[in-house]
Image 1 (tube, rainbow, N blue to C red):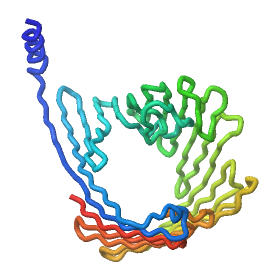
Image 2 (spheres, helix red, strand yellow):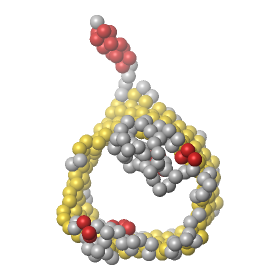
Image 3 (tube, rainbow, N blue to C red):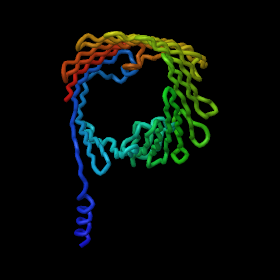
Image 4 (tube, rainbow, N blue to C red):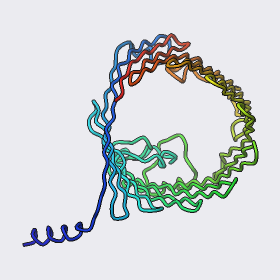
Length: 328
């Protein structure tokens, strides 16, 4: 009798529900060969082939004033359910068994129980967030269900002015093991402002910690060229210039550091595209020679024809990586 009543009730509740849904699938297969010379990974003897394959399924359905989306990723590592969202008007609820990006700004390394997600928190029970956005105002609350660590963010924009506030609360979580600790009770509040007037963009931000983190920058855009001057609590000043025209982009940045034991740093990058071919080079005097983009000098080339891509990368540490991938 209970089953009959419950089934009848469910039919009654859904009888007036008109829904429309869409589902899409995409994926990729990649084969990579890496050879590591004098870099930090050379000591491990890595010199071999690796492969990756994944299939992503995304679904969307709407009805009754609600829209629901979900994703599923299948790979050699197994199945991974992505974030599920339910939205109605200005409100959005999101749940992810793994992690949500907002918690990535949290200070702690998280609980030792369960598997840690990309946000550094324990995600045995997943993360959820509630967000509201309307009339230039945005408010969101994100929480790790196991540790109760949470992040509250408020934004406001009107014309040329944008304001933001982010508050991190880890008072209910486990003892932090990260090198960064945010004062008593692991709380941190950061406020910021961005103002755009003509070709200039002015940005400032700061937090409420005793050893305060702050940033300030002024950027000027003139045609294809952008010049940026910035400073923060560790750098006396940094000056950067970026130029982009046609198939070529060039950027350079110089940091003047005032922190003890920290050297000045020079960054230069160049990219050029000609049809299906792409070439790039990047130099960073502050890197220690680790593999990939962390090496002091990285040179790359790529070729894309339809769904097939070929990429190659080499560094100043006698490291090389070549890959071919197929996307569908």
